[in-house]
View (tube, one colour):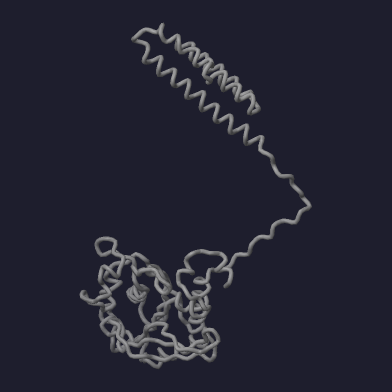
Length: 327
């Protein structure tokens, strides 16, 4: 019985390889796997198999059936694929014009911002997006009980590891590894568990600036941001400061810029700034009697939305080519 099954399988597999049409393949299936096919014809012989051999023969019977069914499906796919009609090729027909790629609006905005600050002598610095609490909070003079450290406002990853919530961490790392003077901007992604809406997203981009030098004042800071506003938003752009508070700067201010929105010049809050708090320099090991500094931060998405009239931050991350092609 086992030999008969082996012979049947060999004959069927050899025969099916020569078939080249769906009609002949269907005839093969009926011949071997049909209700009156050769495989079914062997079933009556099972009564002559000894009780001890029946498990092995039954197993072999199922193996042969599975092998033939698999061969049928495979050959059917091959024949169907080779027989599918192909459209005629007209070599005189003009080709399809390739779509031209372009920079994403976020990349375009970052390039524009870094180009303006580059002309003012700022170099670009980068740092890790997975940070520790020391660089994200402690070194920036943010105390343990500060609301910014609340777990509900951060992506903690276990231990003291977290996704950075601000690019100020890069400023700390640069000061740790570089003696002053320093003149850098830190650009990159930051993460906060905000509910997504028209003005909030859980991942966004920041540009933060840091200058460390002797005798730095608020005049230097405002002059820098004033030059940035005019270079990036136009000659009629203006800058104004409003008193505020940040743990890592003293004094601190909110930054408003006057820019043209839908044809009208308007004041818009665009970031924060201030002179580096002496406690930050003490933590790093800088001499407060010799060095002073200023820092500022701008939201990349906010700048892009204001400059290009984008009304919903979510549009920037949907990867809709129809939207992106507008810029």
